Length: 335
Image (cartoon, rainbow, N blue to C red; front, side, top):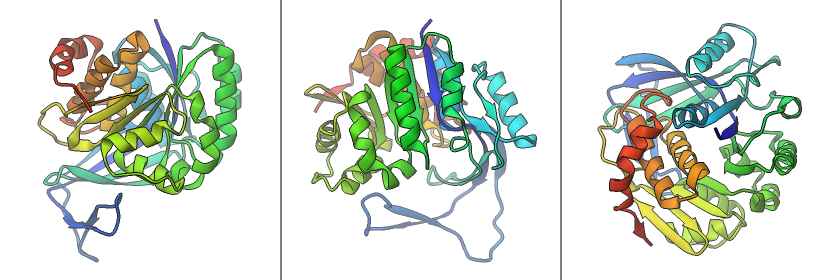
């Protein structure tokens, strides 16, 4: 069985489900295209309030586990009720939590997610920490098993120091690396991170993140999927995957680029769709390196998560993704 370390966040997600919110267009930004707003001072009735476990490391590990890949969560919680709740939920997902650390003074990570039923999207308010106070060096030194891949997501203030540790460990273990940069890294560390890009087998981005990276690096680009793929790959990555919401997902490998449209499902909530795509794609790629099959698994996995509230709800098993891969592979287009 293949093994993957998932480095990132572990959180309690609280979904505040609203019938609708006020959405306005913002033409002044390529990345902040829509704004969610409320009447100031008003009381707003929530349709529902739902608690689910989340966080990038947990979400991706849960998806990989269902696809038959043994996954380890490298994240941190604090002592107390929320930390215990997160740990219990991770255990129920049958994810290896040997390296989940309970340490530090900062509260456990909690996300309050304002979910808009009518517009099928959300805004996330975050507090606490699950990555900054995680002692990565200690966890890596403790890890004695064979590992095939390392997924790196949700890093913050000390990410540059941790990146050195991760790459050194990956070289020693002969493990491949997958990267999902955080908004903090894109905004604050991107110029320093460039030197590490050649180390990564795959980078996963959404379209806004791809644009922000190129803008922050002062790279000239066109806002088209093909050009974004080309310019991001030119930074040193072996493979580039860009998801674009309802427009599907794109990948560039070597000199070839491909696109797959979304799988038509009844959407309820979009939280976790990106992580579900990542786990589906990685699960296939780790086994086969077939990018078309991997694109299909990513799309079908993310599509099913959209039908549930909660980032680990709706995740598919390997068998379920295999059953749908042929139909989706036939829809992949070269761009």
